[in-house]
Amino acid sequence: MQSPVADRRPQSFDRVLSSMCTEPHPAAREAAERFLATNPGDPATYETVAELEREVVADLARLAEHPAVDDAEGAPTERVTDDTDTVESAYGYVTSGGTEANIQAVRAAREQTDANDPNVVVPASAHFSFQKAAAVLDVELREVPTHPVDGNPEQAGRVDLDALTAAVDEETAAVVAVAGSTEYGRVDPVPAVADAAQTVDAAVHVDAAWGGFALPFTDHDWSFADAPVDTITIDPHKLGQAAVPAGGLLAREPATLDSLAVDTPYLETHAQATLTGTRSGAGVASARAAFDALYPDGYRAAHERATELAAWLDTELRQRGYEVRPRDLPIVAVALPESLLAALREAGWKLSPTAAGEARVVCMPHVDRSALEAFLTDLDRLR
Image 1 (spheres, rainbow, N blue to C red):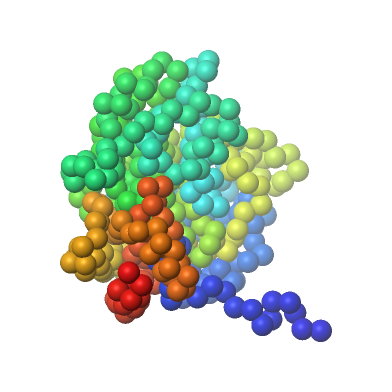
Image 2: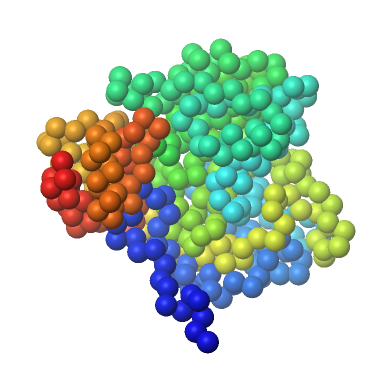
């Protein structure tokens, strides 16, 4: 009997323009297959993938300029030993994606605050995972506005610092900055956000789930070295070109991960700081393989290529009379009539809108000039 999946194929990326996932690097694909059956959630049993995870955390720490990174080796100076009482990593772990990492960052802030009724302050550009975090963890979510996307290009889409400063109080457990917003690719002023958080001794979390593999090749201030940031979300399965799922959570201090730990008496490892128990060894191995193949020159080249492609598409759209929103990273958000967006989707283009209705083109590694030329041809035909 033929398998029900034998004649099916995964989604082609040929017309996928709004996804923040992409085809994994060939080395990542091969590594994922080799480690399919391993579980980094039980590191004392699955020792090889546990070591790979520690290396991935070191890779991510290097990208985010973690203070514990040894400049000579590019790895945290304090590495996890094979002591089975040790939580998976002192400085982070490979999550299922940005949602889990953001939930865990909020959870750590809640566990470490003295507030009786904790709240978390986020910009309106924050990912919807923070709504999940607030619901699951029973904390108040305070959403503050961003500057209008059709206003001052310098501020458009970034958090309104005055509103954020007014929203924090003694019950604020964490303040969130977005470094590469999902809709517009904007980067909040992280040092200024951190200043506001420090007035009430709140934790600072940076959501760089998508932007984290591009920001090191820009002049934006977003990392542990740029501000007193406590936690960062950064996902290898996005611009890192690892296989899905492979997200990432980094913490400045080991105490942050310790605050998340629970006892695991029936595993060889005695404590676990992760949200999920069993995790993907495939994602861990693929993240390590992708980083080894692409850091730094491959990631830099991919970012430069995407930036040039976004600028070209921006020019083409403006010449056609469309409004294109300001951006910091290569996401092109263009205001299209709702009927035209629907027609493009009917023609097979995988486009998703912003909350305000603009079409989003995310210049991922699989998006090339020929695909965008075909998109523009359909745009002209259907308008």
